[in-house]
Length: 342
View 1 (tube, rainbow, N blue to C red):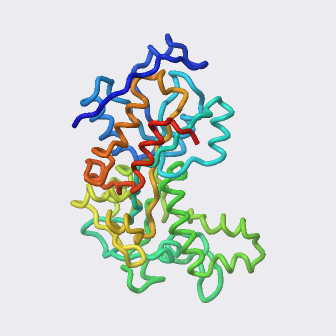
View 2 (spheres, rainbow, N blue to C red):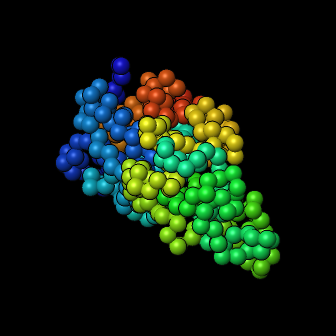
View 3 (spheres, one colour):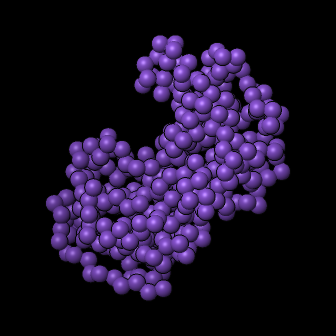
């Protein structure tokens, strides 16, 4: 694999003197646990194939990574935030308040969110958003009425599901995956079951009903996972009846222990995600601190390397790991080359 490196500019920025920049010669990255394996693959290859040090890549979740990204500019702050969701307006405002104004958004491709369980566990093979809502919401529709959730087994609301105790390990609120899970599964299930309409008819405002739709039960049958997917996997290993929420790539690398369910009749694969058929998919991103380009050695080169055809293209190692390549990859490459900020 051959890559042409451009010479880093020696221009300093206000908050980072040349002396301070010299104190750190490697790119520092933090954020999404979904993006973590892709960023780790790229970082290792970057260190092996360029004259720059291997970037330091940490996890912690999209929200935590973006919070660190927005702390300010300078060699004590990270250069790149990985995210499994788009940066929020409030985060952009927080960044700006701390002097982080030139933010370059890079969409690396697409991933699916899957629902998996122990390979030898109950026959969880097909779900709908309504199933997940009925299992996890604090209030559900029973005989046309919105009531406190009485369900403790999956078969109680869907006879096609196993007569197994409900236990789900879902991403904690600091993870970008949680936001997509709420939007594309729980909120959809709330509408499909009639719960949203019942909330509105009970006098809730539309905003309050939307918020109520996203709530999950607190009786121990829905468990937030604040760590990465390895923690979810360990929880599944310890609880044979449980289901867990994973990124497609993580599942595909653990098919020896996990089986995956369809969602609304569609199997999650790179093909169904690329075609737009699988309903629970999302774009993945990383965000570059433009003020650090030319000061932190190798920052722009890392981004260019990450999004090169050889890595991020449909035949590259990221696709082999499970990333669905972005059809607009060339436009993203041009954005990085031009250092085009949001």
